Each structure stands twice: as C-alpha cells, then as structure tokens.
Image (cartoon, rainbow, N blue to C red; front, top):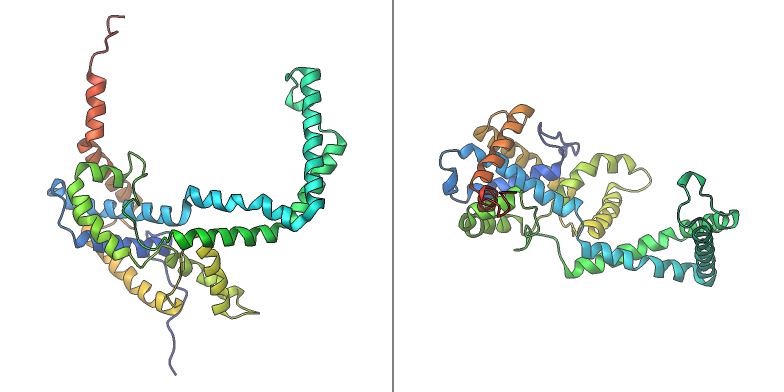
Length: 317
C-alpha cells in the first residue's frame, strides 16, 4: 500500500505561518545568489534579519495590504448592486431614510445650534424604524453584493497579476523600512544584484501558497459533505479575488516541497545566526542591530542630522 505524507505539517519554531516559511526560502536563496553587500563585509550575520524583514514585507504586501485601486473597484459596485437586486423598493426605502435623517439633523441644528450633547441626542422613532428596515434590506441582498465584489476583483487581477514581484513592488515602502533603507545605502547591490535575483525566484510564486497550507487542516475538517478538492477550490476562488493568486499547484505536491523547504530554511537561519528562530532576545537584538546599522549609513538620516545641527537664523531669540 502506498501512503501519502500527512497534510498536517508541523510549522517550524520561529515561524508564524507557512507563507513566511516559503517566502523566507525564496528570499534567502536570492540573497545567497548575490554577492555580500560591501557595507556588510564585517557583519555577515545581518543577512538573517535582512532576509526576515524583506520576507515580512512581501507577505504583508501580497496578503494583508490590498491595493487602493482594488478597494475602489470593490466598493464601486456595492450600491449599484443593491439597487439592481432590491429594485425600486430598495431605492425608495433608502431615499426615505436619508430624507428623515436630514430633517432630523436640520431640526437639531435649528433648535440647538449644533451644541447638543451626545448623551441627549435621540433619533426620532420613525428614523430608527427606517434605518432598521434599510439594514435588513441590505442584509437580504448581501450575497449578491459579495458576488459582484468578487467579479470586480477578478476583473482587476486579470489586468494586474500579483504573481512575482514587479519593479515598483517596494516603491511605497515606509522611509524607515529595511527595503527602503537598503536601496539607499547600497542601491547598486539592491537593484542590480539582489532585487533581480529576488524577482527571478518569485516570478511564479505568491505568499498565498503558504496560506493554503495554513488553511489545510480546517479545510480537511470541513470536507464532510464535499471533497477536500472542492473545499480547496472554494478557498482558492476567494484567494483569487482577495490576493490575485491563481493557484496551479496541487496541495499534496505543495505540502511535500514545503516540508523540504522548511528544513533547508531553518538550517540556513541556524547556520548564520544560531538562536534567531527560537530565542526572542536574539531575534530582537539582531533586528535592532540591522536597523541601527542601516540608519547610521542612510543618506536620508545623515541629511536630517546635518539639518538639525545647523544653527537656526532665529537662534538669538
């Protein structure tokens, strides 16, 4: 009998998700393929917090920070879908509620001049009734709105694929982030060496692959009336709308190579900075060292320091 490897993978110590494990693997391989930055010649162990910081930034951008344009597209279809699903009755109810609210607030302004305390504010019963009916109506048509938002998201991702890392991926990173500072401290190394290799390692991948591994135990538990494949297909459809992930990797194959990559990633960290994954004090110390190291060499910080030291023309006052 051929037995498959278990799908309940054990997350290595020091990682909070499989998305982090797989992204760390890709970032560390890109780092190893690049020459060591010249400014790090005496402190090669800083590679560990650097890889971890870049990996966290990639996961955050691909999974937790939806583009503003996507949010706009999803919001744009909301009210029009409610109107289409609810018809004239929904539109009349909304207009009646809004008219009642306007009359109520206009009366409060005329009577109290805008100085009514919050504790004394009460909406008229008719306005409360209209608001409750309006919210009930929206709940009734919420599934149609969710479908419309998913369709809008799919249309957005069709023109803006999220697999891989585009040239502008880190452009709006905060000024004190590790990617932004490294790009200023050693721009030649960042763009010509490391970033190009990071793009090559990431061109067919997305952090959602790891999120699927995180979700597998709960998906298997839900697979009672339907198959696990059907549960994964439903999950992948949501991931495609939220993150732009197109899937394409079978979950068993994904679990197999994730387990191997986890072992090599842990070995990479332990070889360069023993204890970083399992000891919070070592992790904090190295993370702080990297921030201080780059801040001391950051031309933006040096410019700000020079500006602070310059005497003000009003110094005599």
